[in-house]
Length: 515
View 1: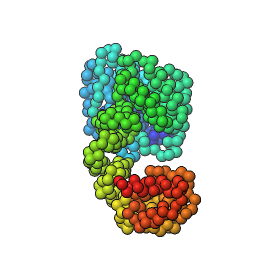
View 2: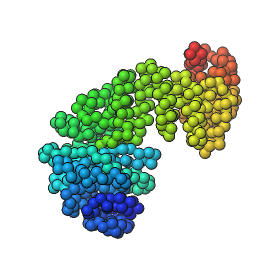
View 3: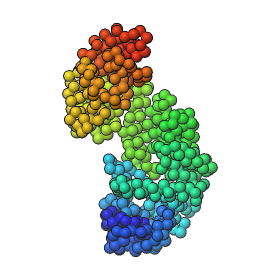
View 4: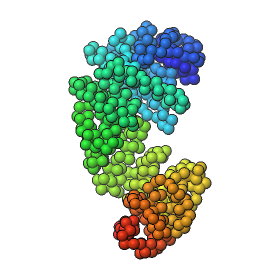
């Protein structure tokens, strides 16, 4: 083990591990709390070292201390689950086994994500970590096993990882340290594809990520085909770079990357998922459905490349539903979203998405049922009060929508933007234009802006040059069967023929009426 200032979490780790091992080799990298005392109280041999700016160097210092035939590597925030560790003895007794992946459950605060890590392996001189950060020993163990014709097995030992539960200040300190180590690692070993992959992954969402991923993939493409297939991070690198490119609108380039990865790399959950996203964008809905189904099939299975939370679950299910709609299988998509809302009752994203999709395709009753079910246990969620209220407006049930609107007024901060927009839409539907204008205020949001433009048209006031046509269509749909509908018709009759907004409104009213 290596640790620093882990007094709060260390005891639980060692209490679970101590009965399973012959010795505890502990490297402390500068603790100022009771970490060392806790380690020693559990029988650990402790070596104190100055932090070497390298996780691999610190890890290897602990490996050098080991005298046994097998190595079990744990961090202070990892606890072997009771009743699952017996297989370690079985694995260690297999003469042709070089190491074993342990099944990790990464607890994320709002749920957990399974993954595999190679943390149990023979104590051999060549089994050493590499990398200043996100250090890896798997390459060394896999290479050794291949040379000796030995196996790497997947064990049933479960380790609960609680390291994501850290306060914001601790996280910021670690992020700053990690960024410095990534940069230093790339400088020291500029041709290490895995280092560049981890560096690029840490930059996701930033412009610099594109260059870092490009460098990563250039290094991957120098690998021979067998190595590229063996290293799971290769496919992950292509997938995450393609995702960044999609965010920047580079759809064709993303597609080229995904096709290359699918034919030359080991598949990962993210590779399936991003392939599905790309297929939706280019309207290849059969391909999208297939990719999202492959992603969903991995849900709950341990994976070396651990996907983002929900990717193999609710996110994949949403993708499947969208692909079904793209294929024209609306009834099947509606049944799918309804089932998913029941199967993932605590997934806010899926419930919200399902309600919106069902409402859009005319399944308003089912959409409203999803909203009310969610609100029964999440009564402070203004976004769902708004969604339910807007559905009621579309049904022409203005007074019922008013009860939803009034509920938002009692929420914290009046339900924020969602509460204010719903109350504004409700007042507009009622025909109370002054109150609608007060509720909508100066909110910068498409529906609010569209509603304000309609108010300006009815009041013969200057209207904005540009209004989101989709948002305006929604506002008109929600007022079509409301008291204000007559005033909108009168406003259109009085408007100048060359009024661009009046022309658009008249066009949308006609389209909505025809629909």
